[in-house]
Image 1 (cartoon, rainbow, N blue to C red):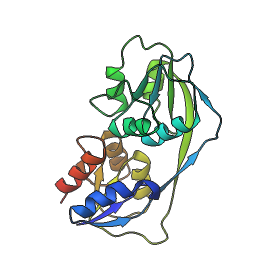
Image 2 (cartoon, rainbow, N blue to C red):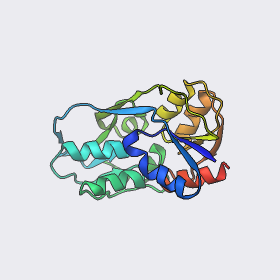
Image 3 (spheres, rainbow, N blue to C red):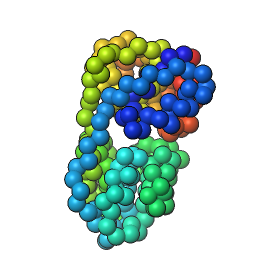
Length: 211
């Protein structure tokens, strides 16, 4: 099966390698670029929880962090791994890797919370917790010079879903999770499979189910 991978080029390698080992032909078509929003230190002293909702946010937080977080919450295993690679262990990784899942498992009262993530991140969790928000990066949609062809496209974010839909290609999708599925369907894409775990393993298994 010919699989289009839309992750940013610097992040596509692990997924592409896994798919190729399973015998799939991989087409790299990055549709998003990540732009850090400054280099100023992120001061975490005084916060009871620092909440991170993406691996990109985790890497940017580690790069700019000042002080030692009292407690860290990561939305899923991939985000927790990115924190760990930077020398920080997540105190909470919910069983369901969504903002709703994290919100359901965060102890109450949560105290003072800092939400660190993308500039266009969903506001659900931050609003529910009355959190301070620090935008660490933004995603910029890319338009490939040559339109890709394939049997299925892998979408790892709502932003990727919207960027792929804008290309106007009738190629079914595999989605990393419910919010990406909603964005893809709202944009007119067919979602053939959704990852049961919202991480690399889940994406690979979903591609297998989409055959």
